[in-house]
Length: 209
Image 1 (tube, rainbow, N blue to C red):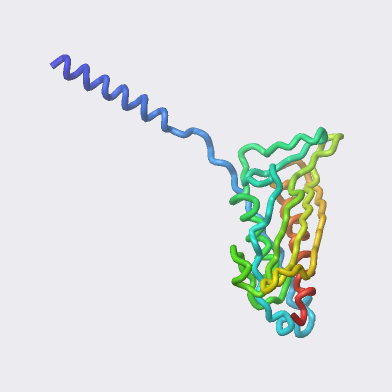
Image 2: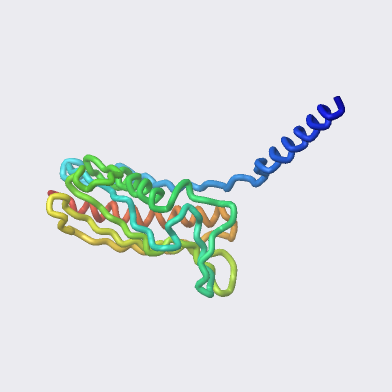
């Protein structure tokens, strides 16, 4: 009987120890999303919807090494790249910016159809974006960072893969202070402006196509 009780106590102790190994006491990271700012319908030129009766595929952006992650990047004066602790984008940066680019076209261009498609042959035209800079840069004197966004985009024809236009928006937005919410707000403003510029320029290039 004593042996049975002893084995039972050992079993309970082992179960408690094993259970404690799998308990995760670390709080999950805070997730941040980026969203487009809708343009007023009054800003659309007359006949824009009819003139832009085309289909566009926004391909998944190419992101340079160091930014190809869901972590939010910071660049320090000594050129050291790091990431903010306990925060993440809602997904890998290429997916986040692809989704945001589609939002920008819906908000700022009058195209018949815009989709995030892996195949350029699903639509008449395609847009490819390369992410060169997408980080919060801290000044040598300290204080709040400035978000730097530099994108290179190509607009092409699916039929012959011919490049019709190139765009290279570069935007810098200063964070109001060094809090994460203010930094993400600066990220959103910078990304919104850069992708809205691409959307407007691409729509203009596709007029009459």
